Length: 478
Image 1: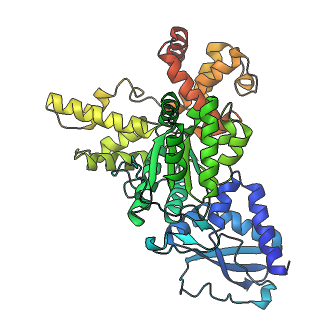
Image 2 (image 1 turned 180 degrees about the vertical axis):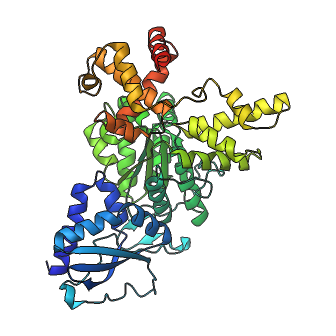
Image 3 (image 1 turned 135 degrees about the vertical axis):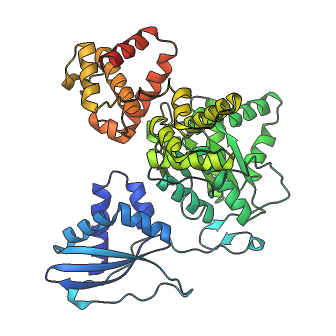
């Protein structure tokens, strides 16, 4: 390995080790090319990189610029700054990089999936190096796609940017870059929208592609029905021979259903071997799905795993405005900001709040206004003037349950500590602007723990009177 390769390998490994999501590092940094390096002063080096498009450039500058500069500085022992430009492909491959002898390195494009261009559909979408992603138009399978769910109307923000980019890259280069694509996140954060967007994009680009969207629950039901009517052969022919792009929603539903699991894994293996594209969604990462067999988990993780977090306030406001525009609803900016501030967690909740407000305005002959929004959603928001801090909430919870802060933030799973901890997470999420990841960090947990706490408390409030009394008493203290 020459000096240039050593430089990149060390830089790349340094970022992988210190970043919390190696999948995300590989996805974004594998797209970079190193153009040149030059000395800009004593002990200072400038490295020029190129990204494939403006979207990648913006994301890498925002998310990875400091990581790259720090890693190169660590490797070289000199301070570094980087600049990123959008690459200009002349169709003849990568241009030769400039060599700056003063830096004593020869910049090298990082290891990456080779740039592949699709041939026209008439060529069967074949590639010599990767097998084929072919169509067989004689087998007709309904695609079940919702044509209204596209990349164009998907609102992108920090919480879903990686998943969006992964989905779009999959749609541009199906089965060539990574396979399967596994997208996970709590319910109603936009996973299903991305599944349909992938299918619609590929179908528009290659009309002969046989795409098929199905929920895991319907997949299981269809398989059971095929067994009952002794038509399992037809079922296998449909999914193993009649589909080029398989999109399965909520795949965690298959877990624990032995015959269906077995059928799914054989279908997965067949499609993957034939270079057909598979995209899956779940409410949890593969490693966190309870009861998932190791042989299935490893297959889920063999491609790219991307998460979607609940939208942050800016994204929530953008989602509301887009929904209002598509439904021809007049939504003042102050009302959008109000709803975006207090209606959290899921896109479904945002849409539901907007629909509820619009319906109330229509039935009463009122205009949508901030006062009307406060009136309609008064049970879903804190009272005006309330300004709860994390410290206030933690203190109130500890006082109510007569426990110490260190126990509330501890690791004990005993009920007398676990329930107060979940209540504290629920109240922090409801009455502050903190994201799940930030709430998890307060308690030394990851974001999935905070998501679970929120869901468990919300579910419990519907049936558990004791839990409801606990929370009402803590609110009174606040």
